[in-house]
Length: 247
Ligand code: ATP
Image (cartoon, rainbow, N blue to C red; front, side):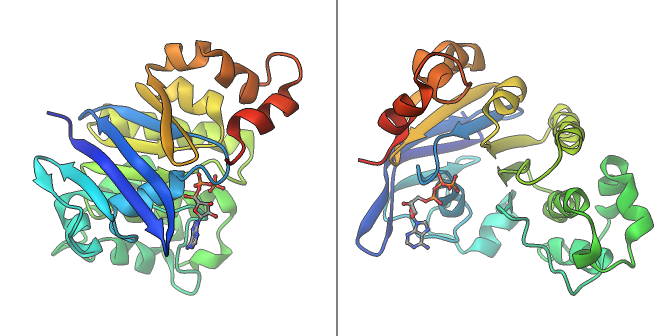
C-alpha cells in the first residue's frame, strides 16, 4: 500500500476546474516529484493534499485513511507537513519562535535537536528575526519548521526557487539525507534536472492532468520532456508553447 494515494482528484477555484481527475501514488520511503509548466496545477495539488484548498471530487488516502475532508491541523497531525512556495516564514518572529510554531500539533519541542542535526546553522541563529535571514537560510527554516511536526511525508513546493546553484545543491543534499533517514517526499520543482536526479518516481502535469509518469530515466528520455524542459532539440521555444501551453 502506498503511503499516499490520490484517486480521481478534482479541485476548483470557483467554477474553474484546475485539477482534472489526478491519480497518483507515493511509495513510503521514496521521493516523488511533480513537474509541469507554470499554471499546470502543481501548487494546487499540494494545497489540496494539505487541506488548504478543498477537494471537490476524489479521494486522498494517507496511511490507509481518507483525509480529503480533514482540517489542515488534522492533516498535519496525521503526518503531512507542507513547505509552501515562497517559504512563508514569519519574518517578525525569531528563528526559535518559527520552529516552535511548526510544532504546534506536538506536545513538545523535542524535535529541535533533530532539526539542528540537518540544519546546524539554525542553532546559532535562534534569536535572529527570521526576516533578516538570507534566502537560503529562510528556505532551511521553512523546511525545519515543517520537520518540527515530525511528519512522515513532506510536501515541498519549489524549494530551489530564487536560490544560488550552490545553495540549491546544499539543500537537495539535505533532502536526500532526510529521505535516507526515512522521510517520504513529494517534491514540486521547476528545476527538472535536479528533480529527476533526486527522485524515485516522476509525474508530469499538463493543464491539470497527469500527462506522463514513470521512473526518472523514463521521464528524462521522453522526447517532449527533453525538448520542453531540458533544453534539448530544435525549436524548443515554439514547442514549449505548443506542448505546455494552456488549452
Ligand atoms: P507555478 O509553477 O506557476 O506555481 P502551478 O503548476 O503550481 O504553477 P497552480 O498555482 O496550481 O499552478 O495554478 C493552477 C491554475 O489555477 C492556474 O491557472 C492559476 O491561475 C489558477 N489559480 C491558482 N490559484 C488560484 C486562486 N487562488 N484563485 C483562482 N485561480 C487560481
